[in-house]
Amino acid sequence: MRSKIILAFVLILFLISRIYKIAEIPGSVYWDEASIGYNAFSIATDLKDEWGEKLPLHLRAFGEFKLPVYVYTVAVFVKAIGLNEYAVRLPAVLYSLGTLVIVYLLTKKITGKEWVAILASFILSLSPWFFIFSRTGYEATSGLFFFLLGTYLFLFLDKNKYFLLGATLSFILSIYSYNSFRIIIPIWLILLFIYRYREFTKSRKYVVVGALSITVFLLSLVPIYRLYKYDSGGARFAQVEISSKLDFVKNYFSHFDPKFLFFEGDTNPRSQIPGHGQLYFFELPLLLLGLAAIFKSKNVLYFLPLAALLIAPIPAALTKESPHALRALLAAPSFAMISAFGVMFLRDNFKKFSMVILFITIVAYYSSYELYAIDFLTKYSAKTAPDWQYQYKEIFADQKSGVVTDEYGQPYIFALYYLKYPPERFRQEVKLNPVSEWGFSKAASFNSFEFE
Figure 1 (cartoon, helix red, strand yellow):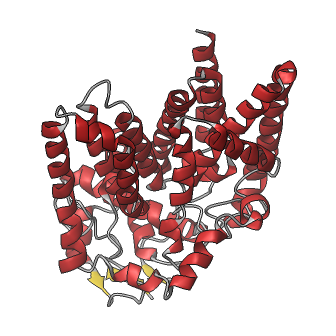
Figure 2 (figure 1 turned 30 degrees about the horizontal axis):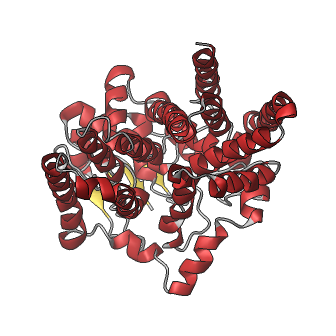
């Protein structure tokens, strides 16, 4: 009972820290948030996206084809509370809250120790890697949640064979949430199959549900195939993909560079507070001890977070922008679980000081997080206003017509978002420029606006 109260306390603290000033910091939505919000608004209005496609599985947006899960979730919030920053960002908070719960459940399944499971959830709730993504409108949060949920359900097949179908549906929702998981999940499914290989081949109880799961999964890939084969879904990837295998190796290992992990972090200010690493520096010895705990254990499940960590950078390594914290978001819960294993390793080997070790760990994490959060609340918005395209918020607060430059990218979507422009009118009035080198389409004009 006491452990459940502690977990509830961790989750409540997480919610408070993510909801506090969520519409004010960052001070404006960036173009993907504006696009998600307006497409959700459009769907909530007449079940069509901004370009008039009815309930699409791939939303054309700027021409890069956004995925549906997060957009449709936002549509529910838009229907309830209107088009605003709360509707766009609250789903990320809730998906991230769900991720904390699944990390707790996964860690408990692996270690059998409730305190380690709570600690892993606590560490993730304070992680600099996870912080900004879990309070802004990033689609990756839904992809991460469904990926971990699918993994958790898969581990309980021995309890109920139909968990296989549930895991399959969760993985499908993940690949329709964020593109990184379209690369990660096929690799992950191979590893999970190897883990259950003996059970699958010896037991006939999985034949029917296994065939159904495979069929459903393969059918879910048909729209993806059609997008890349017959539409221009791969246009943007063609612009950002690497040019050689050597680039992939360099990009992959850049995600484990100490400078990235502990000192400078992601150079994109929308992904990290400038001057902060993706992890706290004091976590390094805990991670090393966590690895020792993994290799010392006779339980193969201990390798699960390590396997996830090793797979996490692959999608980012395939693109020119590396290291990339968002595309490698799976690393955040992986690091949190391994750090919790490190604390467990310390306590198991120094039992006389077990309570002191736990106390020091909690104080170290919370005090480091407090400094990080203060920096976020007092400095972040002012430092990063151009990165969050705050200028468009100022422009469209007053301007209802005229010429607007695209200096900060895609001004038309900010006009639609901030003016809550009727989708049907926009579809009738819009004129497009040619598709850009990034695979993006740009609106040249609509109503009394022109974009240059």
